[in-house]
Length: 359
Image (cartoon, rainbow, N blue to C red; front, side, top):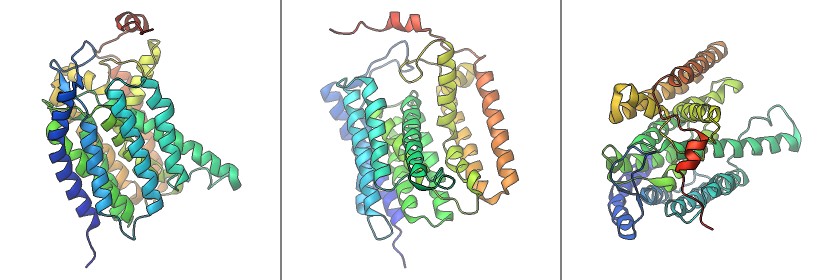
């Protein structure tokens, strides 16, 4: 009987995340690393940060416990190196020790390079462009994908339980897809990420007792991007196969698209301009409230993930039609959500409310 490495990874990550979050919370309170309330935030009391440390340690422990012949040690080193880098950069950013642009323009690209250098990369352009040029294009797309998804989870962490819950749902669908396609390593990675996210969610769901901070949000985004690169759905036409990770990660991709378009229209930079203008904020303003908005986002993530899971079973024509319908639904969603009440801060207002830089 084969050893259920995925079950072990899930159990270790879940138990470790549940248990480690408590001392990490005390550590954050001891050193005063807390997220203060403010006009751009939804919480009204100071909440300790650094929850990402518990998520990181839980994931790493799970992977180390389940190293076996079915897992590429070279790729594991690349994944752990990238995860460690982003966890460190995120924790330093949470403590106010780094400029916010370091994580976007240095940390995330370097983490992506770690993946590409160890064989975790896209195989999109090399199927059409022969030789080294096609490989270079794939590396470039890998960096774009990892930075984009990691950043999308970084800005998704704006409501209690939202980022951890969406990551858990995505991990579950990656796990199911990997199971259907016999991808042992992806299944183990997804199980570890699922356990780490669920364990932390116990303490992070509304009302949150601790926040994961950028250290946790970027780590989860990086892991989701990695799973998206490694998933290889059998049966799906090549051009449709790349829709599987996009659909599984449909909610953070949609939210990032909405925020980017909305803020760009107001003269703001999407990833450096905080505000209560995300999808969940707007759903909350429609009457769903905090918990209702988060649960609605969970439901959307489940529907989108189910579409991604079903894609390999569909014909090429139906796959493309599904992609078209979902794309149109996304466009309509952006248009509708732009018409509902939300915080419409301008570049001038944001600059006025921001503290003067220290010299």
